[in-house]
Image (tube, rainbow, N blue to C red; front, side, top):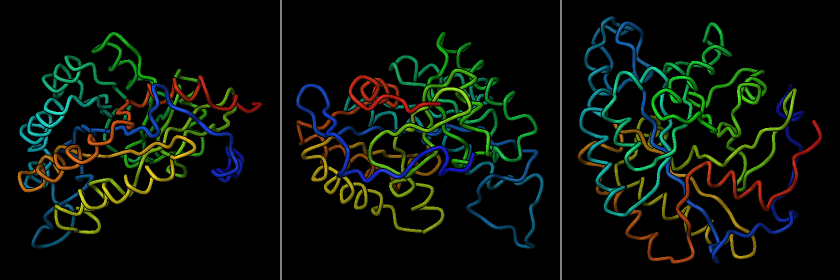
Length: 294
């Protein structure tokens, strides 16, 4: 199915208003991406290029740069979540469940949501058997948490032409790959529709720090600028804002304070709800439009 066959155009100002409970006007959700990078494979991202170019194997400096996030950066970020009593969604590779059990236990202890994020950190278009990958990821999360994941985020937001169909068939209720709206939307599949919950490519530390090469404070500046506009937009109908972080990026010592400052600012607004992806999904299912015909 083409993207335009899965979702029809809908201007946000022409929709019936959406209302959050308890007088809240907008929802903010925070997605923490925890990944396992296979040291035998080319690194998914790099911070340092080798002197002679190419893709060295082993690539110790870039593997170690990422591993720092799971050994140190995650725990540094976790203190921010604890200090501000913030819920989070953990988008985690299925293989990372076994690789980083203390991270899994820390997320479980805080009742974080677990989202499928591919079994390994690779482009879903290069996965040999996509259905098996999606199923193995859900199985790994269920084994670790006792609950199957309801949400999915493709590694690097990658999909094949069949991904939404497979996700729905494998029991997922929402996906976050379709960054095209500030409200949840329905996507058609070959069976019953699936909800897309708003994600972000703009307030995403990969885009800002690794691709655009901004200084650390840009994360705070852009997050607050985006928050202020979406807050204004949500006067008459609720909106959703996502913040995306990775432990090896936002958990670096020079960036963490700018992540912390975001919540010092946002929490001054009493009519903003911090939610998980599945909480946003359940709210939308209760107040939003009915699913389109399959």
